[in-house]
Structure formats: C-alpha cells, structure tokens
Image (cartoon, rainbow, N blue to C red):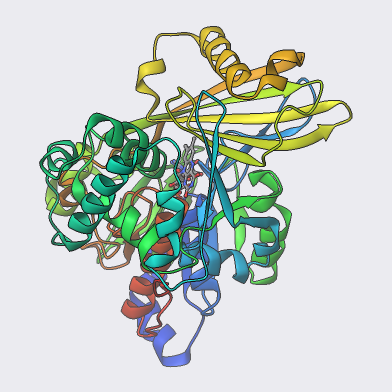
Length: 470
Ligand SMILES: Cc1cc2nc3c(=O)[nH]c(=O)nc-3n(C[C@H](O)[C@H](O)[C@H](O)COP(=O)(O)OP(=O)(O)OC[C@H]3O[C@@H](n4cnc5c(N)ncnc54)[C@H](O)[C@@H]3O)c2cc1C
C-alpha cells in the first residue's frame, strides 16, 4: 500500500502499465463485515492485492462476538443462523474453510405457551410438496387456518415478483385472519425480515417463502454455527486471508474518500493518514455511507441520494446462563410469545448452561429497560419450558442492536444502490445494496461478490463470483 502523494504521481500511468504487464491490481476495502470480506476474498482469488480497513478491533461486523469481561467467554452479540437457500454465504464459508463450523438443523421445533411442540421437517417428496405435511401438522393453526395459509401462499407465489404493496392489507384481501397473520405469517417473517408484518412489503415476504421453503427441498434447512461468530469469522478466515496476501488493518477507521481524476484517489483515515489503491470498495453500513463521501460526490451523484431514506430496525438478544440444563430441544421457534427464537447453546463452562433468546423487530421493547426485558423473557421461558423456572439464573445480558438491519418497507428497493457506482474505480457493498435479498449474511456476501465482479469487469478481467440460487 502506497502513500497518497506517491500514488497521485504514479496514478495516470498505472492502469495502462497494469493491463500491459499484468501487474497485480491493488484494492482497498473499507469495512470488514461480511460484505467487505466477501469482496476481499473475491478479488484476492483473482490475484488482486487487497487491504481491508476495519474501524473495530475484529472482523465480521454485525455478525460478531464480544468477550464477556466477567468470564472471558466469547459471546455472540446475537445468534446468527443461515438457511440452505443462502448459496453465496455457503460458498464464502467453504472458500475460507469454515463451513464445517455450522450444524444443519433438519427439524425445526415450533412451541406454544401451552408447551405443545410441532416438529417441522421435510417429507421425502419433491419441492414444493416436501413441507405440505409439516404445515398441516402445525398444532397452533386450525384446519380452516391451514387452508387459508395454503391459499395465501399460492396467491403469494403467483404474485408478480416485483409487486411490493404493503403486506398486511394484501394478506387480509387474501383471506388471512388475525390468527394466521400472528401465528404463521408473523412468526416466519418477523424473524426472516427483522420487521413486523404491518411494516413490510409483499416482495420480500414472497422471497422468504419462495426461496426459503418452496423452491428446493434443502432451502429451509437452518444452519446454526457451532462456535461463536468471533471464531467463525476469526482465526481460520484470517489464515486464509494471510495466505492470499490480504492485509487486514483493524482499528483503522476511514474518515473520508478523497476524489481525484478520474475517481477515488485515496481513503483518508481517522488518524490523519491516507491510503491509496487502484480500486476501492465501500462496504460500510448504510447509515455510515454519507459521512464517508466527499461533498462533491454526494451532491454530484444521484446514485447515493436514496440511501438516506433507508430506516433501521432493531434486534434484541437476551443471554441467559443457568446452573442446569433447561431445554430438551436444540432450539425452538416461539409462537404467541415475546421471544421469537430460543437457542440452547449447551454447557459453555463447567456448571453454566447457556440459552439465547432473540426478539426481532424489537421496537416494542424500547423504553422497558434491560432488567424488565430479562424478567419478561425469563418468566415466559419458565412457562414454556418448566425446568427454566426451577433453575438458578447465574447471569444474564440483554443486548439491543438498534440498527440491526434496514427495514424492508414496501418499495424499499428504490433506495438500494447497485454495487457498480458511477465512480470509475469505486464499487459499493453491504447488505443494504441492491442484492434482491433482505438484510442478511447472504445479502452481504452477495453484495461483496457483486462488488468484486464490478471491479474485475472494469479492470478487464471479468469473472462470475455471485453463486446461483438453489
Ligand atoms: C442482532 C442481529 C442479528 C442478526 N441475525 C441474523 C441472522 O440470524 N441471519 C442473517 O443472515 N443475518 C442476520 N443479521 C444481519 C447480518 O448480520 C447482516 O446483514 C450482515 O452481517 C451485514 O454485513 P455487512 O458487511 O453488510 O455490514 P456490517 O456487518 O455492518 O459490516 C460493516 C463493517 O464496516 C465497519 N465500518 C463502519 N464504518 C467504518 C469506517 N468508517 N471505516 C472502516 N470500517 C468501518 C464496521 O465496523 C463493520 O465491521 C443480524 C444482524 C443483527 C445486528
């Protein structure tokens, strides 16, 4: 990586020289979340010399862990899961050699406050019939509700793929009652989209059911990391990056992109230094983008104008350590409850049994305070899983990520930008860019691969990185 002055002098000659003699191109990726890491991996695999700038002292961005100061344990800020339909994330994890650290869950357990459990698993029939019996077996829906749901699903799948009216009125006009909205559509969509049914549009709801459940037998299989995210996106990933000459600079916050001719000429860091490369990938969350853009760029390019309209949606996770095992299931989807998913992470230290409860679209918890949130969640778990009520709660932690994801409101795609920016040597990545996916790890990796494809194309070395759907 060169200093800015050296680069300015050399810059005009660089591209012609590079393409004539196949000198490795250099790329600077701002943001070490999954989008930035996927871009780095994509470019490094094609011979680019890549540097990743990350403002925090760890990789993984929102998919990260923290070290509990009391115990030294690595704790995920929030449990992250993926599904079989996440083909780009799976490819990324395979590429960097950590795919063995996820456990597929062939069965999902849906539990209601009366402690009844429905097991959701595929039959050996071709899609879309593989899950028909599982849906028909859901104890929390009446036979009539199930017919309503089947009708609603069929209508949704027949809807135009780009149609994105508000979902709730659409559901009502398609024969859904409050019970099917709360116990079926709401249960699936609030977790998948991190947004409540009354705020989302039809487009991403359709995407969830079509790609996640209907299109392929393996699509609905949930994959749960067997190690904290900090390990999943930790040493093994670093080893891969080091082997491919990717330089990682942590605690290196970017302050601003510097414009030159014909594009970005450097990244100014918060410590006052500057770094330059041939190509740049901006891979920060949507609410950080405008801070990093030089004024002349934000005022000149309408490309970035819509980003400010994206709005965040929060997720709260409640971490509970008990003195004994409390659940017989590895996880449970909670129906008619405040918590939506609970994961049993087992005995994480001698005599400490760890559960994590996730509340997506957690706006209603705002203002309750951590103690009250913990109290309500523990009380609820005690009702659903009686051993919880008899166990001693050793420790608890309530973590809220206020800007966990962008909110998939109707028509949200008009504010998402393609990875190909109008600036010649700049690509943009992030789960909020135009991926066709909601804000997920899969969307982040897709965007990173997409950004790398843009650069490879513009550098005259086109390659296909984005993986096909299942
Ligand atoms: C609580 C929670 C639960 C979630 N659960 C799931 C789940 O179960 N499944 C799923 O698929 N998705 C889940 N998600 C969403 C998923 O985490 C994100 O979609 C994905 O990680 C986004 O990756 P990204 O690279 O686009 O952004 P980020 O992860 O936000 O990465 C951006 C990076 O840029 C860095 N950065 C910011 N500013 C600067 C700067 N000035 N200079 C240098 N670096 C900078 C940040 O520190 C960060 O590391 C969850 C998210 C949250 C918050």
